[in-house]
Length: 86
Image (cartoon, rainbow, N blue to C red; front, top):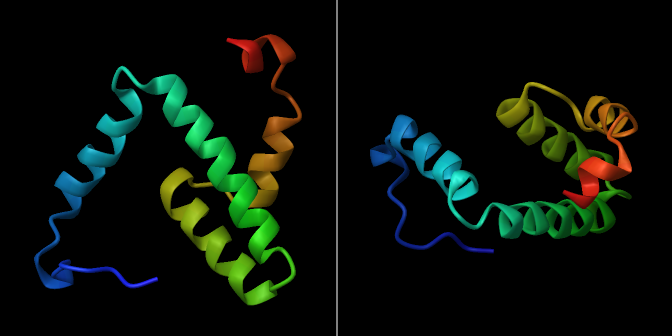
C-alpha cells in the first residue's frame, strides 16, 4: 500500500487527531463502529500469523487507545450483548 500526496513533515498531529475523532463522532457513528469491527477482523485475520506484524498492530492500538490488543480483548469480555445491540 502506497500513501500518496502526504508530506509527512507537514502533518499537524493535533488536527489529524481531531479529524480522526470527528470521523467517529459524526452522524455516522454506527457506520464507524461497523468499520472498526470489519477493520479489526480483517487486520487480526491477515496478520495473526506474523508476530512482527501483530507487534505493529499492538503498537498502533497502544498509541491510539493506551491498551494492547490483549487488554482490549480482555475488556471486550465484559461488554454485554445489550451494548453490542445498541
